[in-house]
Image (tube, rainbow, N blue to C red; front, top):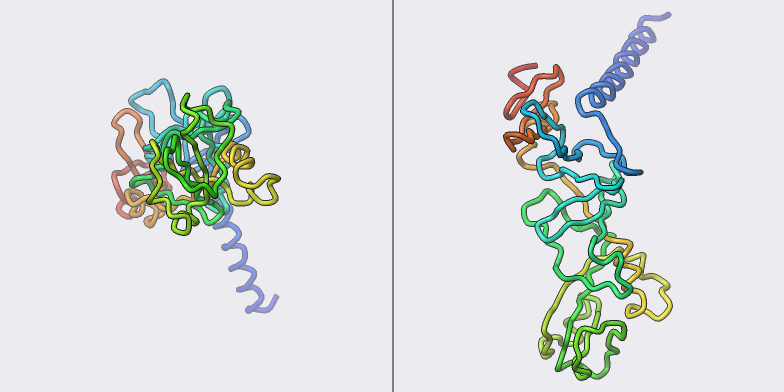
Length: 254
């Protein structure tokens, strides 16, 4: 074998070995688990109901999931949601409001709030605006017929696209409550009867959030480690390639 070919062959072996070493190391330090048919991998982790002093979990501190009756559940600042899909290639997670699944006519109670979590709404999402128990409203719009929120027949409830609020002039409405709801935009495509008849099924299919690197974990991940969380101390840590656990960075221990 010529010297250039031998060098190329050697480099290829090194690269392949390095890649497999990374995969093996990840599965060892942060082993995946399952909740029902949902694969739970880094940066997510499953909360343990039995906490031992040695409990050291691999994942972002705010990404702990409950697993109840084979259903993964995440808690956001606004409410709790079922996790129906996690896509580790696109860094996206699909959530469904737990409270509305058994409702024939789904009625969201709160806006989705993310606060300082390393999450953001996806470009796949669509924002709907619900106005409940309105005494003043445009006569050109059809009300939601399935809601029975008041004994007063004069009070009506409406759903519109949030992007249409400016054109409709919602500032002149008088309603008891206004709630924004996030759905996947493709769930409303080709719906017979339009938004009024389609919002319920769209809400039950959930919405998509994208995750990004957590600020508290950035230094650890840059150093080649994995962000960890100690359930006993409730503090974030950094799990290094050699198995050691440090506070912030693996640079001093590798």
